[in-house]
Length: 495
Image (spheres, rainbow, N blue to C red):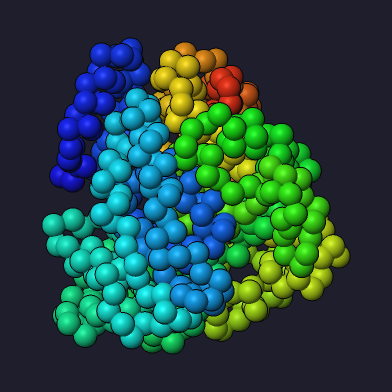
């Protein structure tokens, strides 16, 4: 069994504070976040300004997973000497995290100690775009993690910049431990924000492609990146505009959120776009790589095409998953999925604002969750400065039946969220809905009492044995900010 160890006296102290200061019901809920199947992850980042914004949010969610490393890498946009944020760009954020850590652990003792994160924040391959010849501290950290035979949990390797430091690590394993390549590949998962250098195509695929590593490469991230004010539906933009950002993140929320680099006077987006107000959200193009791992109840890590806060993806070839392009005869490029080839980037650069409905459909898999994602961010910002009793915490959704159901066509399925509760005692509202895009049954599905804790669904007569119906139980509390969690039920025809 794998559990995070309490490594220093400060963690012991704050755990003691929690034990004596919160109601037992709250403590039992918090204990659920300390479990042996927590995701493991290593971030590689080129330190771009939107990476800095993403790091603020990432640090506020480090109670959700085991951080094995934060590695500075390079990309086609940033390397040492070229638009470089500095080798130690992450240090101020780690210092600020240390300042708010005593309050964060009042909300969840699973937050890692600042010293734990500092010793895992290292420099990778940064001397040039795509440089992967040099063995670096960052590449060796990845090697050590992947070769650790004492922990067989998957490791999500996130590339917020280029994949070159990841490639260097895999090359070291290939050269020094070729007999363990299959073992390493079996525990490796990739989530790339574009292919921001050529090393995935030039090295990783030719040498590791035979092992079919699950690989998600995202272009949907534009929905939460520099051009969000063009991409998001109007009702979602409020959550990224200056008034909301100032009230919920930027002001009076502690040292870490005060470093968040929202728009300032004179700043602009791509192509000189100045249609921003000081305080507007700037960009977090890299955040989908870890939003995908948050255990919201959407089960997004079970399959990339199921969808969740990090977007929804389709299988294009082997175990490679890219963004679903809403054009029936679209042919995905054979090589890199990046600024020069990805559908959304090309559309925003060359076609916008032609056919905005098509654009919205493309970005919907991620954009649809904007309000829930941002409200959750606001709650985490509150955790930096407020006591447990003063802040809001997400509801805990329970089902009174299995997550996966096998049913007869024409039968009625009883759906129940009995046992769901809110750790703060807030009132809850329920919404059961058919996640059509994730279902491969494309007919209509009708849910009775869809806004009640208990609902029912009549199984379509024409569902076949290969088709699935995805039903989401969405639960919202009435706290401030309003928080949302889910359970996904997958219905199949019985054999």
